[in-house]
Image (cartoon, rainbow, N blue to C red; front, side, top):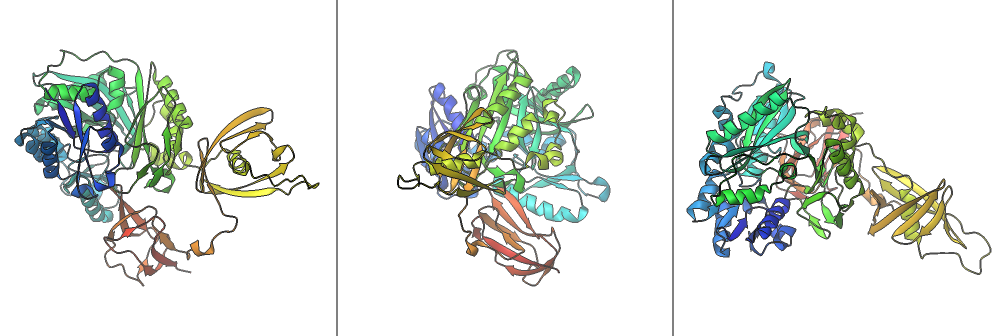
Length: 614
């Protein structure tokens, strides 16, 4: 029997594994980088071991340090979670060679399937060895790992070499393996997968299907189970192929076989020999705990002859600290509050007061709704996200709500090109028109300027706020009866609650303030100074860092005085395990270059200046 598990991971998945271990009476050991010293996954574990450094390559990708930590802490098993070393056969062997139980498939099964190139060969599919114009578009893909890292769509042959180099660097940083390959890119297919669960006695379950078609940068955003709209024939075919893949490598534990479905046909993508991020939707529909089943499989317990019956529908949304309107740029800073209404499942690796840094994935949480029908599950999830209190870095919350309510999604007509088609409309800035006024009234509470000696009405007070890239100016007055504003009746106003009567309808606004950042319900506002600071202005053509990160590459031959074309990649920033291209804003001359490879930059740092051609 397993009595103590070291979780070789961080964040949300480490917390989720610790929760199941606690329910099973198993002690947990956390490992943490210096950046994660006070992270939630450390706080919820029974003990923890430090991995010196911050970068994944120095910490969570150091299998030797993790095995040493497990032995030092007295653990008798290791659970890898997902990402990092979860699909590294060498790490799995090192765990077993140290006399520890590996909670995952046999290393040989990982070896056969963790490399996407070998997995495709096992299923009789060969990657493209030489790409020609006739093959375009193609997908450059990392052979190891997942999560959209090391993946690039190439539509022009001239871009292939650059995208191969970027994919190799990103894959090596995220997984410790820079191998990549190319394959045909299927436009507008549906991403459908099958959850498998296998024991050491020859039983393999196919636990239904999941649809993961809504993706950005080839990383899933919204997932659901079961995949809607599949015929019984296609569903059975997917189950059969998934079980066949698992049996082909003598699989044990939880795994996922992924397909692209187009024109009623299933195209094999890969087998992930680990737990998936989206596993909670399967847990909700089948009433199982997949982490508990992984542990039981590692202990040698047998599965029942067949899986439990499916029940209802589940939908999951990934809440990221990122700005979808700014090329999905990751965001950092203090997370002040993260709360959701009852009725949904919240899996998270952070709480209010935690800092969101630059070293790791920007996912803050997963939110899951389960209901008897798909429509009810979607409605519940959209409503919960809409009413959530998320105070801190910018997130994709509004995008998630709009995606869930989009008629293409509610009608189950979505595919992997959903955001390519709809991103502009889904990211159009909108703010509650009365939110800036509520913020101003809450701030003005207790600051009345109306004195008993005055007989004249006070002059209107003016405040300015920014929200969604737009500025809002509001005016209010101090009167003998309290605060007043044109067009509304101020029923109540204090520092945390404002009630306005708008055309006979009373609306409540809960207000929270953190420095110049103000949250009015779901609307985030930035209080603007009365007089702008002229020192913050930059010359036209200035390229500012959209996020804190590391300059990993500068375009070859780029120096001051170089002529550049609009859209030309100039340099690459790495933040939160992803590489982001910084391109020329216009055709012109590079008049200044302040970025150098290896340089750490803060958000807003001046990287370069392009002087546009008149």
